[in-house]
Length: 493
Image (tube, rainbow, N blue to C red; front, side, top):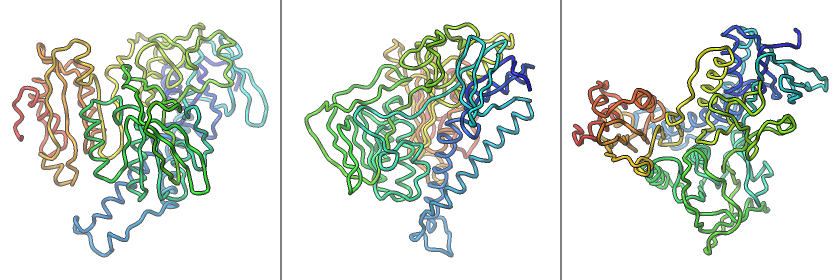
């Protein structure tokens, strides 16, 4: 077994385990230290996978409840309800299948998994304390990779008891559907859980400090989402600050007031709200559960990073564009890092960073990631998929822009599916026709955005997208039609 490796990775989330696999593929001897009982990190165990599994159940429930419209007989659609124990059993089966798959990948690639807490003991040394208290010191001859990820964070004055006032970690395991739930924050986590619990039958309230929902998205997307959520009966309070929340015998009593905050200029980081009142009009609401979805913070506790001289900023590990920290021989990727510019806490970003870092360590030529080309996906109903500059950002950067949009309701495929909310919006530069951003809200948006990512990476023009044949009948026709709309030539509107 030995204690010497080429690379030792701390953390087996989407950044860490992908870096480990890629490093092994390139011929390096790799060990991974992970304190959780399973591999996969936040995304697989508490985040992306379980929440999207719940969203699939919500979609299935929606179809069943509208069974008469689909010609489904033999049952009473109005009587269809969600069985949470069955839902959780299936969700957990999906998660365990994927975590088991990573274990198989580790075995296939001869990666050693050490179960325990890691501490940086030197520029190339890691002390590992296993769950039974035993200690072991590892040496990384080439590089240590810190990939410890992030954890949900609250705001000052809001005490999370993880029973009535909860994070998303608890929300994915609620044994029963709450009669009512309020959600602080309208980023991806907030609006996804709003969709889930509204579908399951909860009375849902969203409270967002900033002036619009999904604050990092194009304003037209935010407006469309608010309109559709309200139509579904979800209570939406934007520009509103939670000033207090306390557990009572009746549930959670929330005080909120109108806020004076403005949308952030940094499109990769929304500042967390504070608990101090910023407005004069106060309102109270009592709900069964309050979900705090106001963002995530880095996990570096117990790592002894600062003792070793690693530069931190607000708890994040500071790295350069190739993920080197201030200490030679130690690099970092994923949610735990900051590099002075936009950085998204997204699983697919962490994975790409892990691949690039492993290739650099192995001596391959690598280029920095272009974070302007990161796809952002939100799996609420309707879905959101976007990449590149919003219309406002493009104008702020001095671009002379022209915009084209096409609604899903004009598509045959959308009408067949009964999913006609939303649109595709393309932001293009006028002189050279280059596509600067694509913003999609509607059916399959999280899949359709892949074409847009490739278009931006290849510096595609709207004209080139017009000349690209989109199959009929598909949802993707909306992308081609939006490109036509940039030139004022959309065919079907």
